[in-house]
Length: 116
Image (cartoon, rainbow, N blue to C red; front, side, top):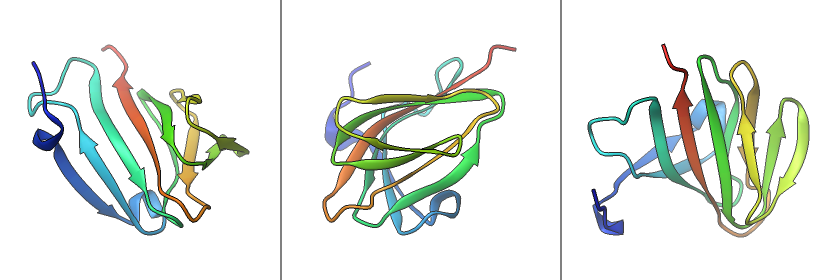
């Protein structure tokens, strides 16, 4: 499978998980989901935009930070993420992200479900 940038499905989510602003998500997954993969997406956060803190159950989410500075809530600990940084929110853990800067920020997100 090969997917061109202009072929990705783009979603805009208002106040995602109780966060602020509009999160832009560009999916890399085909319509038929891959085994144990719920999400592979580039997430773009405008200044002041956020995804509210939430818990993952039966899955984990990994972030690879691409652009800008993002404030990460990692199980209650605040971390400033830069391009090239990586984080994982394991099953039962919680996280949230916020762009507190005046510049755009982006990351790759992967949600992998547990094997049954």
